[in-house]
Length: 147
Image (cartoon, rainbow, N blue to C red; front, side):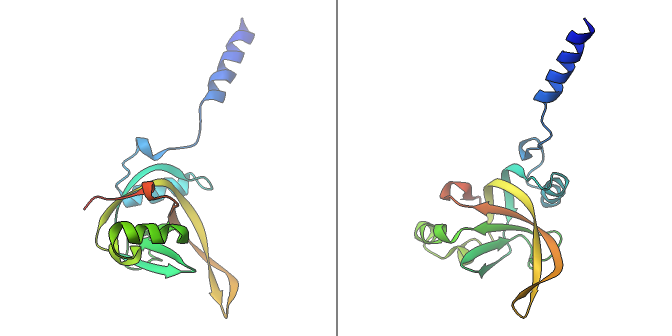
């Protein structure tokens, strides 16, 4: 009988998951999204996130949409749009994504993940870094305009 209880406990604990999903949290609160992604690192949190976009930038053909004016701000979440998706977004919205999404609120489906961003000096990576929360967008279905 005690082995049956032990096996039951082991089975139930094996079925439980420690991976947190955003669907059970308030996913429109930016600091909550950041805290959950940090808590779950190196994994991310999966869900649909409501984000106000304040600025954008382009680096190595990627478009980055930011929730803060300073993309290095601790309170910033960056939506990283794949270069392959940029022509389709430009066609869909009639403007380049780095211009179109600024000052709009979007819903982004994907994984919010804590990323280590290194500083570069004279073209070489240094040992200095900071963390950002990124959500990668690889498909048109992942991003929608709310207002």
